[in-house]
Each structure stands twice: as structure tokens, then as C-alpha cells.
Amino acid sequence: MRYIAAFLLALLLPPAAQAQDATAKPETKGEYLARAGDCVACHSVADGKPFAGGLKMGSPLGAIYSTNITPGKETGIGLYSLDDFDKALRKGVARDGHRLYPAMPYPSYAKLSDEDVKALYDFFMKEVPAARQANLDPEIPKLLRWRWPLAVWNAMFTDKQGFTADPKHDAPWNRGAYLVQGLGHCGACHTPRGWAFQEKALDDSGTAFLAGANLDGWYAASLRQNLATGLGGWSAAEITEFLKTGHNVHGSAYGSMLDVVNNSTSYLTDEDLAAIGTYLKSLPADKTEPAYAYDASTATMLAGGHPPDPGAALYATTCQSCHRETGGGSPPFVAPLAGNPTVLTKDASSLINIVLNGSQPLVPLGVPEAYRMPQFRAQLTDQQIAEVVTFMRQAWGNKADPVTAKEVAELRKSTDPSSDQVVILRMR
Amino acid sequence: MPYIIQVNGKQHTADVESETPLLWVLRDTLNLKGTKFGCGAAQCGACTVHLGGQATRSCQIPVSVLGASNVTTIEAIGETPVGKRVQQAWLELDVAQCGYCQSGQIMSATALLTKIPNPTDQDINQAMNGNLCRCATYTRIRAAIKRAAELARA
Image (cartoon, rainbow over all chains, first blue to last red; front, side):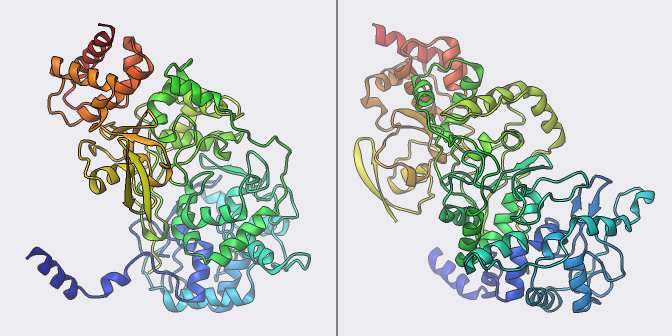
């Protein structure tokens, strides 16, 4: 009887309930490009209207807020012409002439083609619902709010010309380069910044490009071909898998990369993801380092049940049941620690941050996964986290520097516990 | 996709998604309900099973990584000499209060005694650290582990 009732109820439900599904693939070119640019991640807040802005972002001078880019005429960009939109997107100048802070990645978007700018303009003007939401003033002291120095900054640090295809490489490579340097604005997190907070390189002509950088308590790993700490051990197909699903045999997405997978890369076509893989595989290592080699003695020690030091003992009781005595985890769902670039990289911020705060859920194409790193902020002291992280960085053949309790204490202070709230920002 | 897995010495086929946790396969597909669901995040130990002899939280093991490893659950732990002694000690000392965590506790205790036949308090605290008991029967659990060790010496 209950089954019949459920069946009848299902017939009564409007099909619109299914159309709300976050797994919906982008329907127009503009919507697809907005996904590739991950505009929604910064121009929305959790539970807010898509693209209505309001996300608080730290800057060296004080906090600033992302703006309303819906086509509302009073509070959004409804009065923007294509030319106004283009100036904001590629030059960082708003319709009223004020210069945008480079938290807006216009130095990357400068690479966009005219055609893509037009498609994005059409999407924002015709497909995004207008939201009436006033922009918030930056929390920057009045005297430091002059924006004219940004003109000097732009002159020094941005490229004058857009993306030009490199005839020495094939079409997929060039497509990958266009997506990585342009809309993907991967360098905003993965490229180290210089004295004026400019990205040290905006394309593959500089060895600092995507060489790894620390941002807001996370270390965005090197995407160059460094053998141990970069993507040297990842095939192009594995990079594609990572961007599509948020994980692969080498590791899982965490920190702000989760927003990238959840809201952007999982929506891209296989061809575009493969192009990104091809391009990233072509970026040479920026330093020589030995390739990672597995050492089985740690697993034997852990399986034997007599951990010799506090770090190993903590690993055995808190980490081993998921990440296993082999340090191999259960890839692709539970990340391996043996040979994982995040564990091996010099700056241990991400590793400490994940142990302290756990990770947010991975929700590729709107479907949450069963596996998620829990937080140990309340269970472990700074000293214990330093010990267990140091153990992981030197076990199974991993070779990385020890971590101090002071580093853990600093990150504990500057990071907030992760909440259970899943941040899935929908486009519609 | 069908996965061929070895559970309690027998071969089973489970036609599930690759990311399905082992715990769901045990309880829902193979109808082995002795292993409990507690937190689903490897924080409580209620779902502990043995995977290739190691105590492992089955809620965090995707079925796709099992391969040929043998899974032992509470249903078959009495067939091993150590497991049989742990169960006997559990009964003698009447360890369980509500009993929800008991299956996981016995699996962790058996794994410990297999590795370390005469564990110290420190060994026990460390090995049992990930198994929570809301009734707080920890002193009886520790006593039962020592009793099982004693039974082996007798």
C-alpha cells in the first residue's frame, strides 16, 4: 500500500523538482564559461542569491567584499554595456571609472578572447536573475582607499595583450593554456606573489608560474613537474580525473580547491579537462628533487603494534584505520599519505590545517561523497598534531622537514573549525 | 559493478558502486548485521572489522579497494583462538552494558591480543583509543582484555 502511495505521489510531483538538480550541466556557452571562471565562488555567499556578491575577502589593507554582478539596474551591473563589462573583466575598471582591487582576477581574465567576453556578457545580462542587493563598502581605512595607485600597479604587473596561441604546440595544449592562464585563474592561488602582491608570473614564460603558494592558511601545491612536491608523478589523465571528481590515486581536493571542484571543474567537458592536463604536464619542474620512493618498513612497524615514538603512536590510534599502516589510504576516496605532494611539500600549512580542521565535503556535480577527513582540533593538542604530522612527513619514504608545535598553534589561531554546511553555489 | 570480496573465509559478490563503504556491503548486501554503524566518519570504532588482520573502520573502506584481502567480522571472530578467548572473557566479566559498541570493541581487542599477547595498560589504552563506549565500561573492557590474555597463558 505504501509503495502505491509513494508511486502516486511521485507522479504528482512537478518535473521542476528535478530541474533544480545541481548536477545540471551548463546549457549555454556563457554559462559554461562562467563555470570555467568559477565566478559564483567569489560573487556569492552560502545561502545567498547566486552572483549577488557579499563574500568577505581579506586583503593586506583590510577586508573587501565581492560585488553584485547580477543584471539588477540599481545594485548590479544591469546598466553595463558590453564595452563596460569588458573593461571590468579584462582591465579591472568599473563602469563609473573606479579601479577594481585585483582580488578580481582581471590580470588572468585579460587573456580572454573577445568572443568569450561577449558570451559571458550575454549570460550575465540575459540568464542570471537580477538580485537587489547593495554592495558593501570595503573595510579599508579612508586614507588608503584611493584607487589611483592601482593604475600604476596595473601598468607594472599586468599584460597588455591577451592570449596568443603558441604555434609550437597543438590545439589541445593551447586550449589548456588558455583555460589555465585565463578563466581558470589557477595562478591566483598556485602562483607565488611578489612584494606588491602581484603574481610573479602570469604564464609559462616564468618559472614561478603555478610553482605553489601559501594563501590564507593553505599551501596551494605546485602544479609544475616537480617529481615529489609537484605534479611530476601524475599523468595527464590523472589530472583530468582529479579536476572532474576531486580526487585520484595520488590525493584528494581540500581547502578552497573543494570550491573549485564543486562549483567549476566538475562541470567542464572531458576535452577541456584533458587539455588542462596536457598543458600542466608541459610545465617543467622549477627545482630538481629526487622522485618519491616507497619504504615498506613503516608499514611493518605499524602492523607489529609497537610504535616507537609519540608521533607513530598517535598515527596508529587516530589516523591508521583510514589511511592504513601502509600510508596508502583507500584511493581515490581516502587520500594516500605516502608520496602525496601535500605531505611532502616544504610548507606544511595544508597538512596541519587539514588535521586541525578536517575538510569540507566533496560534492562533484552535486553528489556528496561518503568519505571526508574529520577535524581533530578538539581532540589533539598543538604538540600532538606537530608530532603526528612530523611522523607522516618522514614515514613510508616521505622526506620532509619536521613541524613545530608553534606552527600548529599559529594555524589553530588563524583558522576556524569547518562547519557541516555544504557550500554548493548554484548558478540558477 | 559487481565486486568479488572475501568475507569470513567465504567468497561473496556484491553488485554496488565503487565508492560504497564496506560497512554498507556487510550490513545491507551480505546481511551481516553484527557490525554496527556509529558515526560514519571513523571517529567511534563501532564498525571495526579486520582487514588482512588489521583492525579497520569499515565505514571508511570503499569496496573497490578490498581486492583479495580477507575481511573478518564479529560473526566469525569466535572461530579464531584469540577471538574465542576474548568472547569468553567478555562473558565472564559481563562487559557490555548497552552493547552497541561491543562488536567493534571485541574486534579491536582481538587485533591487539593477536599482535601483543600480554599487553600493558598503555598498550591497551593506545590500541583501544579509537573505540568509544557511551556507557563508559572502559575499566571492564580493560579487565576483560587482561583476562583474555590470562586465558591464553592457562
